[in-house]
Image (spheres, rainbow, N blue to C red):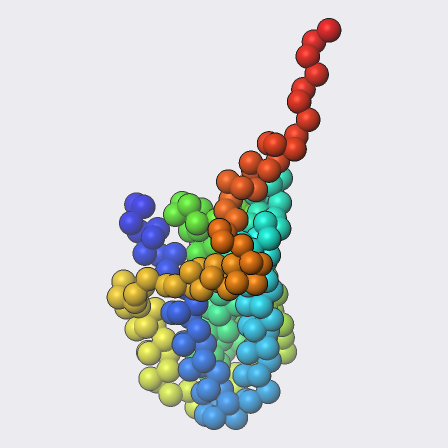
Length: 218
């Protein structure tokens, strides 16, 4: 079961989802002549990714987090999943009926929620971090999807949904291990001037050290 979660959680990796997002955005711009929609999706995705990165930099470099919430930064996997899958689902079903589109989008949000949850059994994030990532991504998707109702006249090429589905089936098992955390850690240390990153234990150790000693019974 542990191996299954480790494989499933890879569906939220930026190195897997970003290329698929960019392919879908490029087709929206060039094939469907929906450049404005592609730019809106890109802007929403970029804003969510920037916010996620800032929280990671703040903790790794300066220890900014919450011990009470066990929060060290927004989950990137959860964010990318909920910011990517709903729009990918809509692009793949944009020629279908509105009911089919809605069903696909709802299914995509459920999949994103499952990916956010998967960060817990693989011990990558706390519940607050996974939930924050899911919600930030959901906001990005809702903003991207607003106003997209009904069937659209652009002819969707068969290769696009086929390629997206094939990539999602093959890449989690074949893609190399991601290095995004390593890059963010290196950048955090360069910006903060520290020689060691803050880790979750530092957050809780700091609370234990600063907590007042309980009064002894009189």
